[in-house]
Image 1 (spheres, protein in one colour):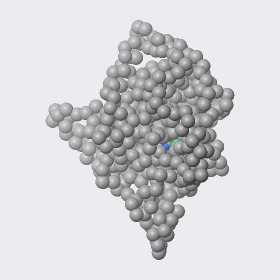
Image 2 (cartoon, helix red, strand yellow):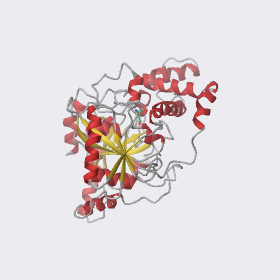
Image 3 (tube, protein in one colour):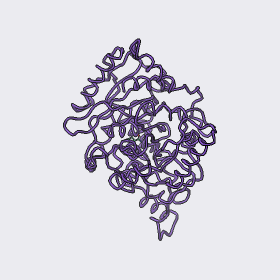
Image 4 (cartoon, protein in one colour):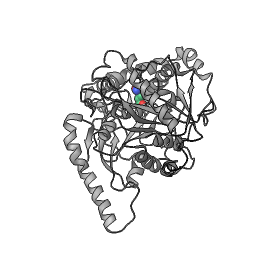
Length: 456
Ligand code: GLN
């Protein structure tokens, strides 16, 4: 049934880069056989899953939407995917994205854009736009995405679905084609928080292949949500919690985004939470910090696509020297936005800027990711994006305007915090969905999922 929905939706959406129909049917039949034989099956048995194309899948092309990986077929499977499959999920295929995760619209794919199922003249957001569109169109109930600075949450908001970005280190990055290693996370796009929690639990936990995957025990997220449902008859489900409402006039949001937060505050109060405005003094610096750090890491991570270690040499045909081979592979095989990020990052890392950038940035940090939020609040709520999904092509004129729209999604990424984006209304002007995000302390994923579930 999912393959039929995919076939019907793809001509208009282009959410998928690869469809593994034979593999999916074989996996689904294996689940059927296990059920028929009375053998135990996992919590995701038979659930169709779409996987972002920057997560390695053994034997199935994995391109990160880059021409330079158009013919790349990995020999191994990313831990997050392998754990979902071990729990019974059936991988339908690989979803479209901005090349290597660099973008906010899925238009920076080497293989053409994905359309938003709500309005096919608009972008689905990005970079996990194919995964968000697949879930929004009802092709699959669950999809894997990755979130470095908003790439799960923002497309979820733009497509009217749920997006969960785990705490940094909660889910292994093994088998994720790296963009910015200190920020990259593997997250979930889902029809509901409850569905996201099911997948989150099977993916999370330490992994011998990723030293940054933290060892903390993985809570039963589904049980944490059940506590909310049980409370429905008695005490208000969010009694005792204080939600900080991010309020900052320096970050412009439109009427729809502001209205969604105002309505969310009323809902949170009706659920028993206290709310209070919270100022984040460094909020306006987050985009600037992110767009130094993320491109700096990207410039190092993407050095491997040189036609020697990785990268299709097709674009370097006729090269006479190693230098020409590398330049041809990178100049012809990497897209304009990816090359812009590599140049930005290489510039930021050049020795002459050590004091201006690294020295200033190194001053205030240390101590790891915060396990408590300040100001006496348990979680934060804010818009996900300053506005609903723009039209295709709207971001072409100004990359920096596109970067600025990440103002509210990059702060939790820089701090390694868990965040869940949930639908929170519709923009009156465009009819497009808008979302709010809940953010909690590092490793308090269960708390954030619980609040988002109660809200939903
Ligand atoms: N839009 C942001 C960027 O372009 C975030 C992308 C992401 O989270 N992968 O870097």
